[in-house]
Image 1: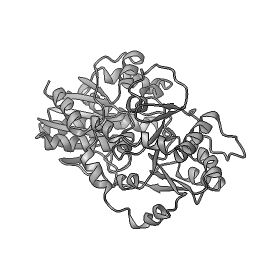
Image 2: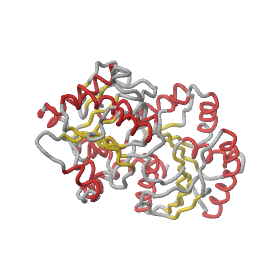
Image 3: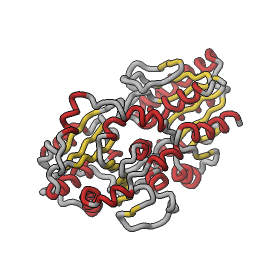
Image 4: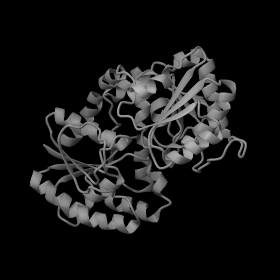
Length: 402
């Protein structure tokens, strides 16, 4: 079967991009004929197996008029490429790619099967009449919409009236994770991690430096922790538009010796291996693949109970609607109260910690001081294996062959 993976880019740093490279490469190894088509060219790329094409050497983002124009410019090119390559199925990844794939069918007669996929909580788009209307219109014209969590599927069903849905969780190559974790840290970071003494404790967080990831709440919470444990460190792996603001906040809070933003890293597993606890401060998600990455290395995990993903991963014993008190010590990780959707780039002397920040700060202090608690949550590999590539590929194979 000839498959085209349609995605915004394959740039290192994004969960959807990592998913595209992993899914395509694993399907390639299964014997499928895989090609990738990106809507824009960005580097460095995740490793991938298959042929590569791009529609744009520049950036697809811009105002609504540019993006609308791009839809109509790219859709016929997608149709032509599918004909030239004799593509049988498009797997489109995330909203913009989904729109492009379906429009190539709707206006330009693309006859291939279209499997759209949703990787982020679509509830966040309900306040935008344009975006929510586009999702309602385009997704119903795909053959199948794959959701990466049950919560996403429920939201599409109930709030968007999209019924052509199924849930297939993101996959993770556990064996590869463990292999990569044995690599040495890049030399320029070794000193940061090796400043070890009996009082040192390393927290780590991974994600783009954008509003979605809520890093400013994590940094503000860390200020209170440092007052109790001055040798603790927080490493944030990621790049994004809020880097300058976050670095300014770090200076404002006098955390330059304790909090380090390390940018994008191709091999995050060697950083995870050298850390003691993973902290996830997202305001919203679709799944949270990085949680599985951390669990696969047996790191204790503290995560916001945001929609969607963390609860399904860390506390599968809970129903999606169950009300809980925070912090909630789940079966595989600890859920902390979600943060409000607001930028709070003030020092703690200007704006006191809000309740959700205090809960997170207390949890981080607890994980440092309570060895039994750390041991309890240092067995994540067992859970991570449920998301191993072979188990998830079985579901993709079933869908593709149906």
